[in-house]
Length: 391
Ligand code: CMC
Image (tube, rainbow, N blue to C red):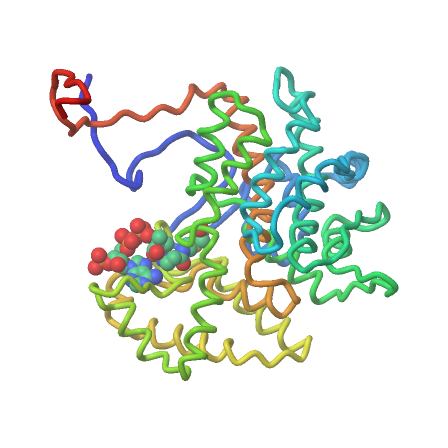
């Protein structure tokens, strides 16, 4: 009808129909393909959940085996990608590196661009599921100054990731089952979250029929920001800052509530969850388990607990329905695993990979039109051109 309604931040705008993730922000319910996040985190592993998100159902044994074998067959990354990585300074933010390398993979897998059949789609999906963990591990190893390695075909998906990230030369690699279990949980809990900023980015870039890897690279850039995936890094930096400043959580609570102070309590609040974030509940319990089992005493965990208690009892946070979100405790677990702070959002990206893929696949199979929002123009009306000498 020609009438355009502006909805900043798309708070009340639906962009698509989707059969992937169900989310009820009032009741704190999150389900992937109908399976509850609590059950998946408890009973499934990350590869099974990835399969369910991408293909619609939890896999049978045979389906999972085939998916895993296909992934294993494509788990090498062209050695020239290593040269691109080498050209980055060690100080480069890992999210920028990961986004660049993911985009660069297109050059080495040109068949992943023109997706014309389900087979093309499957081939592109398997390749990126295989190569992305290598890029994640290499990004971390580069930052730490460690040599780059490949994985081992005999290992499971998450075990192999751990091998690629943590294997030291001249040392046997032993998988700590508690760490592996926590990593599986973290990846599962981050695997999809319907039409969030990065997922909407992947869908909108993909809607122009740009390739899968380019669409994912754009999603990684969107995830980087501190209001989205970058919150996990920001939370840890905030907790460390509070600790270095004497641990006075009340002072920072006051800052968060002061409208003249840009400080926000990172890891608190969510666009959709208004009672609690079901992912945060599971992660909080996992943080306790991992730290206890590894015998890690991390003083910032106490600071996090105090902040949470104070916020949950503070009228400012209660009125605005601000609760700890998925990222409030995730960084504490990553840190206990020996993952550097700047890598936290990269871990989020790896978790979100199957969700982005599933959403891209759904968008292409539904033959959605190119994403192209409208605007209301507020600039100058017609102005005659003035030559540069007369301006
Ligand atoms: N600390 C202090 N005040 C806050 C916070 C916070 N973390 N979050 C929201 N508010 C206030 C905000 O100032 C506003 O107050 P008022 O009504 O007086 O103007 C009110 O609460 C509503 O906030 P909003 O910014 O309008 O809400 P939004 O839905 O646009 O933003 C958010 C959601 C997650 C970006 C925001 O809560 C935030 O910035 N949180 C901190 C960053 C963070 O933890 N992000 C990770 C989100 S979960 C991971 C993911 O899915 O990406």
